[in-house]
Length: 311
Image 1 (cartoon, rainbow, N blue to C red):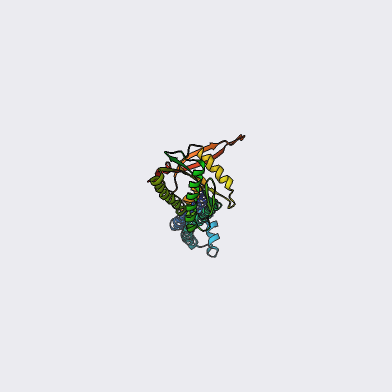
Image 2 (image 1 turned 120 degrees about the vertical axis):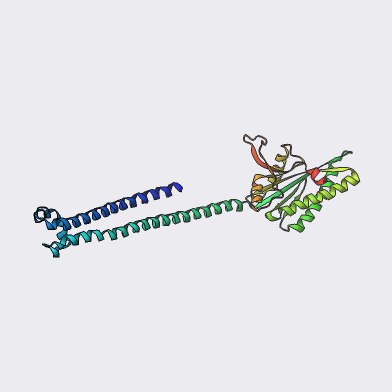
């Protein structure tokens, strides 16, 4: 755009410089002609011989300008004055050229400015569209336990059910539109991104409270793992949520809270920062019989989630 403006200015300036140059030469020619006719009238009018010898050079222009004064000496004086005062409209034309040049450049700059503003608005709309297509988020929570006595699978399932039920009851109060699925993991899906902080707060709050109870009564520590993802559809498959959670855990991310870059993009766009996390790069995960890996660009929210809830 800057190059276009410069080219336009150069072209316009060059064009009007040519006109101004022509006007300057015309003004000099008129002033010189006025002086010559004045000298001819004042000097040679008293010398009949010189007058007769030179009038053939001065008569054509004088007779063209003042045909009514042919044959008089006054014609040369009048021609001198006419040439002198002809400079005035040329000076006026000079100033008009400056004004027209400035007007053209200003008008063109305004046109470019309007086009630039339009382009920025289109870019803003396109950028906004990239955020608008992110329609839903998911939170997947899995829990393991640590205790002095070994816990059976059934006992762990009972603890899971107890914890997930309590989390579910709290979330339903905060976001009535949220969908929850309870099995080996807890899955929360919702399109209310603005309530994400409340939902995440609730999960951590319940885990913190129950951790204190389990530690005090049974010397059991909760080891949670959480992943947050986002989707461009509201028809999220629970299987996909679990698979992503398991894949991320396979990167040795057990006992961590993390989110994907897609979720972080939408989350930050909404000017939310509490659970933005820190980008840690892209991770590749190979599924069975898969030639090309699935990649996950991740942010770490908490490196040690059990320590977070214990605190």
